[in-house]
Image (tube, rainbow over all chains, first blue to last red; front, side, top):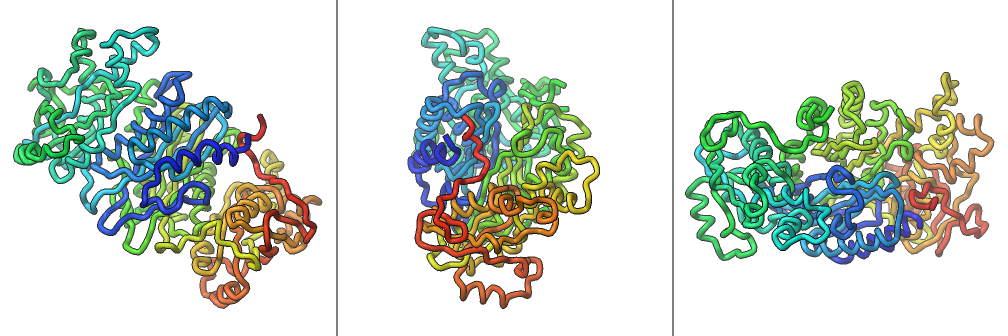
Length: 320
Length: 320
């Protein structure tokens, strides 16, 4: 199958599955064209996922498509952006029809779920990897950056932490229990907190998504803000499944990645205002937990014990 | 070296080498932010280059950086876009300091040359490949698409064709002659026709850059326009070096890729108007050649002989 046939057969249907009105020219020309409304600006992020590094070998293609787009979209959530479109650069060892059919079906579904239209891409031959770039918009100067945390702000997280990390040892489990399945779902089907991110605009002082682990990612946020912080570890939100199955639940919640929850800082008055906005149920405001506080930097300490915490995040170039 | 050190040491200097005022937030946050002026829209394109497929193994890293960005920027030229910024997803087998130093130096230079600021990226471990996404802007509805060619329009190309294709067999030449060196320069240092692309806005009815070969790429343009065309092969612009060294110069000009010249269609009155604009020397208007004409489709014929021409472009999934 030629590259053009492949695009026509498998990727144009994805582009047609979700058509954002701002994407005025989709795949098929030298470039795609996105209109950015007056008063808005473009936010964008690129992520590469390599087989055997970011997802297991022989990972089911439908799951891979959804998980990859969710991971990419999570960066839009962290900025408080409205999703618009994405590009996909796909490197494939061989163009297996079954694989492409399942992958493109999963991508079409995920595209609709997250409101991200396929704008363009490139397909090449090689070891399996995906590079996705997601585009969103925010009102001018409205993006939530990593660098805005102020001393005295509260540190909050969405959802529960450590679940996806606990799932890593269960990926080959032939018949998982209900509790194991709950953890596995967190790994396979991360939920980018897009509605929450938008709801946080104008309230949160800084935000980041938790891809590498809370300690590592909150550390990045604090460093960018020129501040330090403290986590009250007994406040960390742990799922019932995690506490039931893992004696090291707290360590996982601190250091394991792949949860794609949001971690953000917010002043107490802003949190009160935000909590009075509970008219947005999809933003999951009721599932926010205050886990600590921003203080003079540098460094992040646990329970007030002033220990310099090592990043527990995966470091792609760290093993040399 | 950790991923963050690597970015800090090698890629932040690239981002600082060329700072486009529209890129309001560069690398280091969850997303980058680009402002799109009122009356403008965003155009963007993604390209993957894999070692051993799109460039030779052990290709010098400085050349690789410039060539990759030039190839990506050529898609902006084909749309008539003003360059703004780019992202780079780099997959590297190992983080060799020498390689990264040379690569990032080449990237900083190319970034300044093309007016494209580094906005963000991702680095992962794996077989060497690069995915670049370039961003530009055009006035709303001002982009030159592939689909606008009208029956009766002239078909034009910039520069000379076939040179880069002829260079492929010379890449390992230890001491090339002056003529061989002229061809090699076309392969190693393609020149995206950014000034020409902008000059063509409002004049050309359709445009494409020649990456896969004239016949293949003009074929895409005509198909997108629902038209056909004829090439007068004796009009094809051939360099002195190519005609001196290659008896099959014409075949190379028709079917070899990697020249990154622009091929566009234009009405006769528009070409006359364009030619009266020769106040933009950097647009190289004097080096345009009329090589054929758009006619009723489908199909592209050579010298009026109505032969269906096979695409000579490289087909990444075609060899199965």
